[in-house]
Length: 355
Ligand code: G6P
Image 1 (tube, protein in one colour):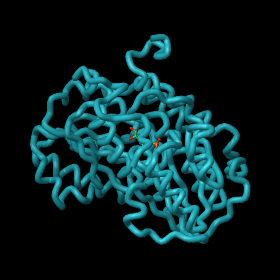
Image 2 (cartoon, helix red, strand yellow):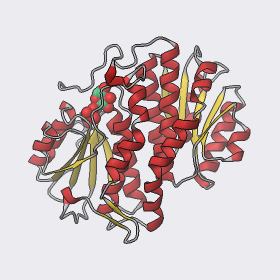
Image 3 (cartoon, rainbow, N blue to C red):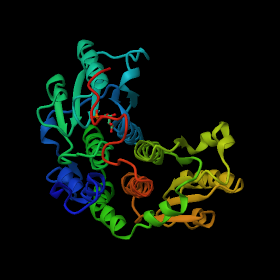
């Protein structure tokens, strides 16, 4: 199949397209010197009320990322699973900005939440990959993630592009990003390339395939990465995989931990967040779980790890994008080893247009 450019699956091809997809997403939108973000689609964006992100599946994990980035910058933001948006009775009105994150622009639950927000008088923005999709018509404004077409049912490059596009949007909502933050964003495509060129994920996958269950932990911006790592894993391997906030491990999931349940821990930087995750790593290591750390060289974390998946050093936003690439590769190689239908997993659809 020439469409796969020599890769065995669209998923692997799309994982490898990420540096290009991210460069496309950033092109013309960041000015390093001025610290400015220019999202020309969204010219007049001064908003100081609450911000709500709504999405499903992988896009929900990008929404969690976005809400955290907004809050780190002092904005009042939350992320909601679109199918729960109405049931949760989330207050929404003309003062609210509702941002629907949807790769396809056709997910019924997300469109419904956006229509509801419109009815309540909120301003709506659709963050999508698909020109002319329903989300572009339902929303007041549109921000394109520019990832290019994604064929694999399990989202990969579109997630990375959502993380970056939403970070830019958070920056624009907050009057720009710092020089350092912009410089970090601009190095993400090269760092993803480094991971693609050097990853040991295939070896790790071969060692761990056949385990009872696979757990993923992270905190802060690494928490959505843990959730996404687990979702990708279960989607394409059909194995039991769960993602947790690292601090929640001791409140239940620890009961699952044995020497047959590998734990993937995303731990980057050297601050308080990393220190706390390391103490969670010790808890699972003491129960003989095989520990895989995805880290930018945190030697303390590596000390407790059976396997290390290295990423280049960057800030917490860049790390969330790059660390996720390591987890995509682990999922891919485990699924490949198990002979799964990687591009079209059983029971799943690329876009879910019913609710
Ligand atoms: C389906 C796909 C997922 C996707 C979700 C939301 O379940 O299988 O990969 O994350 O829909 O799709 P959207 O197009 O709204 O991002």
